[in-house]
Length: 177
Image 1 (cartoon, rainbow, N blue to C red):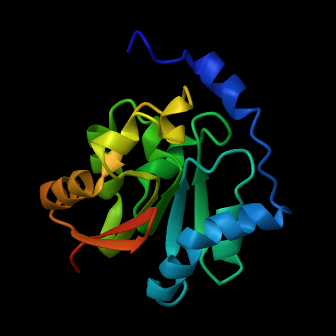
Image 2: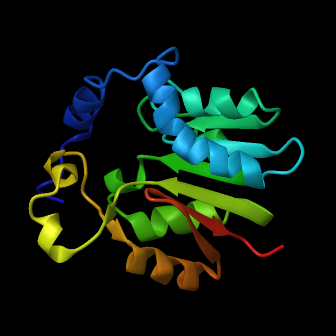
Image 3: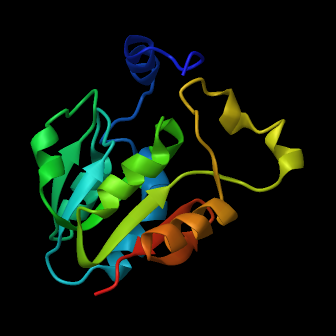
């Protein structure tokens, strides 16, 4: 923890990001998660965008397809009341690498999924030890936790989830119905 940024410095770093809901490039980036997620959602589902940031475009994209999406972000949408409800799906795009206690936080999110629910996680994954040393992703000072396929396999077993690698940087953990 001594090497983690303070909340104030972390927020200042996030404020440098230029994510904008009208940015087509940002929409394409998020579609890597939204497209496979939408293919799995049935009917009008209720979801949570955990770590939505200041520009909750993913939530808007899902809402445009008939889903309701609550927002939570410790800096930009800190309404902890939304964390007390249950959901059909929870999305975390470019969030898990920022978690200081990922096991506890992902387990807490998992507990908020209804039977048959889906936890969608978008993050770059560690491919090999050799490539890790020169990986651009580790140079972001807010990135403090990294996952590999083996990490997600362990997490799925720990949660009793079905793991699906939906895209190179997207995994789904499905709760049994």
